[in-house]
Image 1 (tube, rainbow, N blue to C red):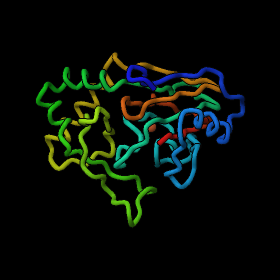
Image 2: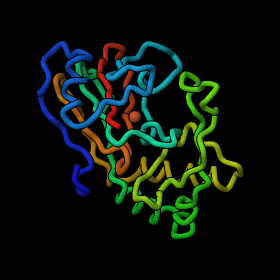
Image 3: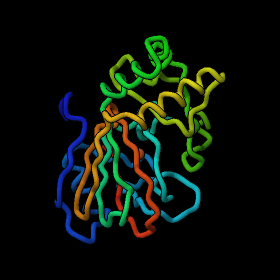
Length: 218
Ligand SMILES: [Fe+2]
């Protein structure tokens, strides 16, 4: 994707019922599939647990980048809709540039300077921990020198209360910001999103029949 286009929505490009294979084939048109998580290309996103990863539970998701705990998060994610929630479960998207503007407005330049320091860590989901993968990520900036960003509030690991309060204030400002774009996917629609230069969130939903697939590109 070009530097100015952080996401694209493709309407009605997949036929119902949507399959993992169809999502993988679509995603492969834009790059190499990540099979980092257990060798699986396209993951089912459907509520099936009371607690777990965002792909396993109903309800809202805070603003985040995928794999923020990884030393090299995937470049792009693809979200394909088989069955939307009757109500909610929409995507909220905000470009890195706008997230930075939100941070300046809410936290001031001293706050932004702190977000730009490589002191932020995230806990690694239990399912992805192993002997070779520690339970907390190596430290990173949120707004990184390479122009990418990493973010998630609900698994952030802070050494001190001031950092935690700063992070929570940033998330609140993101959630209150009119700069985000709301995208509702319908059956057959696909969202392609730059995971290095945009944040995404999900609005609340309770419909257990919501079915999407998610794939990532390295
Ligand atoms: Fe995500």
